[in-house]
Length: 300
Image (cartoon, rainbow, N blue to C red):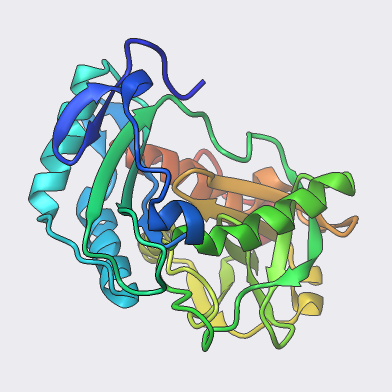
């Protein structure tokens, strides 16, 4: 349940009940998927409710609009203030926030002149759950970078994600793993991929993936913990030789991967750098000090 009769959302800078909010059925975004959005989380910390990397998220929202030609009239500080106000009005602490920039009525294939902002929030647990994921290599690939601005978080791009996830679940898997148009590892339908051995991690390079904000946080944590991270173009066979792997994203947080197409990773997840990063990430967003309980056996 995303909202109740008591839930408030923000539409074009004004708060109103979510249950009574409306939009134009001729909206260009509704017909063509021509809009952009963000997924942001807030957490209860000892210093109060904190939105994780609000600045980075709203800067990416603005950049996404610029890339596909949607006018953007908001300042990052303004959107951040509205977000905190929205949380307070709905009495939310550990929440998921969804800003959406959508176009008004326009049946032509041209940039819109009328643009709206909707900002809503709800309680949402880790998107992929808390168990080890069993992935399926998808028959769908990520969109070709010369066809779309894949680095923009565009509404219509997620049809690709829906197709991949739905296919995986029909076949008894938890989630999909997509390759790029040349057969290299790309990402999940809504999360970035990391894999590794010992203290060395690997992740697909930019070009066919969304530059995730949680992905950037993983880089920060690896630097702090002394882990080596390499970006590159990797084949599925290289993933199959890894000790561990995980997905990361704002909605998913950090989710361990148990297998791909039925082949399990050879490491014990709880004794890997992936598990340590999972714990460190949760400490980071809750503004707690991370203290590793023990050194993984594979490092000794």
